[in-house]
Length: 500
Image 1 (cartoon, rainbow, N blue to C red):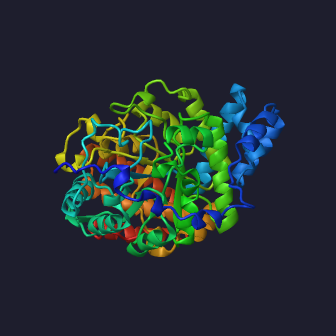
Image 2 (cartoon, rainbow, N blue to C red; image 1 turned 180 degrees about the vertical axis):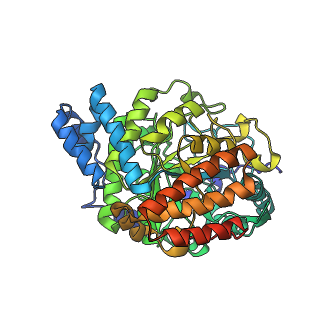
Image 3 (cartoon, rainbow, N blue to C red; image 1 turned 90 degrees about the vertical axis):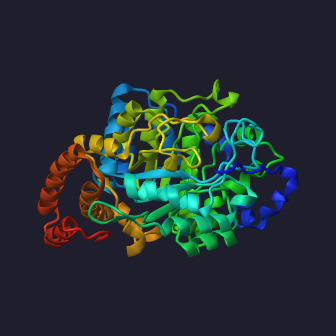
């Protein structure tokens, strides 16, 4: 993999990428949906919350209704240990009601670390001269995919792109098609990536329509911090990312372009965590208001150390583990229908602790160096990574641990083949029907993965969990049981990529 020359800001007209009219169309009376003073006022006014009010708010979450800013601020201000325990219990119940006991796994695929931006907290920032810059060719992307789909057994990826002219929408589209073309022989069938979500820079409506045309999954952009003064401090104004509103309305443009699902997130540690949770709620509400569909996923990564990046060492707003538990709990309760992504930034112990609070997705076997999967190394190379990971355990290990704890790993990607996306899946999530389809598909896709990729130890533990799941389906969904048995036997015989 040859190093790529890293262009500076003066070499291309990056500001031409921003289209002000594609911001103004979503403003309300010229104002955006984040008003810092209003958020701070809500947090201040809701400091005192009696148990009766908290319980009423929790019942609203259990009804799968989005909370108001005042209700969310109330939960954020709860400090009583008994009430916090009740909130955590309810968060788990909400997740179970909407998504059952399944956990979706995925892997991140970093295809480039070229970036025109200069974010103070990021190892990819353009001023980091220690970073070894690289961009994968389409053949190299296929080689990465062969490992992910054919050796590890992943079915979903989040493909990560820096913001740079050499990784524009056409490169993104070509790379997604390259990933989709890979089909690797496995023990009993074949392995391929069935869903590609994209984490990329904010794009125009026109560019997003190109991605929609090649078959994008969720389009994911993290605002990093919603607190505008902080945002403008850590994102220099002479960079493309320095435009707060262009980034803030990235998901709005994606929805208008026809992308079915969008993901939002904040990087916790840049500003006060309570403010960021409130802002994520406001973002969700505005998407629901304007498009009838809230975020498909919410991510909540914490700031992690990055090579040659002093900002990450002494962050003023670093989030401790107790506050991390609380913010995850409140996100689940405030936006009860959304998927929640817990990443390998966190170490294994933290992930075990946080997962039951309402998380629905997690990554495993993760490598975030450019080209790291094909190199098949467990070491972390700081000069080619955006940050350092906390958990690099194998997918097999993570799946086995989940199964031992009673969580079934779902490799299902049926939604995009069945039309259960966007507003359609949102309604099904809110009424609990999607969880039924997910339970059926989790069983057959888990069976497929066990036969094609699992170690004998993991397979034995997984099969015991499958027996339990099938018994529950027979009892709770008797009308679906005959069809499940028929499909399950097909998968055991070697048929692949079947779904309800």
